[in-house]
Image (cartoon, rainbow, N blue to C red; front, side, top):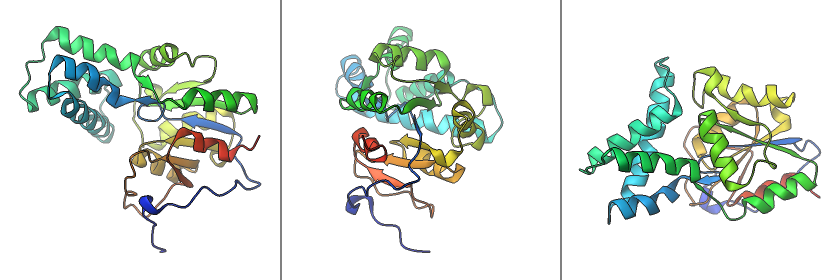
Length: 241
């Protein structure tokens, strides 16, 4: 097997070929919306520990989604998110309290979008490319964060994995996107800032783009996404105007 190049040495994006995808699916958390923007509120509530709380919270949230999926348990994404928050607070020795917990949970409905997102989504719309979301988030959580960002007219469909009773990277979750678009997986560009998600989507058969904003190394799983970029603007290379 050929050696996998380091993400820090990634080449510039190559021009898309004749098999360019016909639609786009975005992951939500970390890709369209900055999950670490909760750190501002967390810092106000717990001075000096906001960044650590936000990072540990996110890690535990994802761990819980994987655990319940592998164990065939049914939990909502909100349950996993709240559980992750409670664990992170206890791990850091913080007195969370009901009011602070609810305030932090509500902040997940108002996550900050990345600054380039609107221009990218509007460009896709002008080019006639359908763009949607496929996320672990519960329908209510997703609907609110999309509405709050002002993206409702730019994203259709907004798909939650909830009907599968699984979380990504279970193949059943990725199949929601192909069913919604009525396209083969290879005809859909799946975009995620989470390397594990981009790899799971690649295994499913999607054309994939990993948005590696932090210059992280590629996960060592013997698979790499179709392409690697650094901002959401790299999506547009797949769809020449």
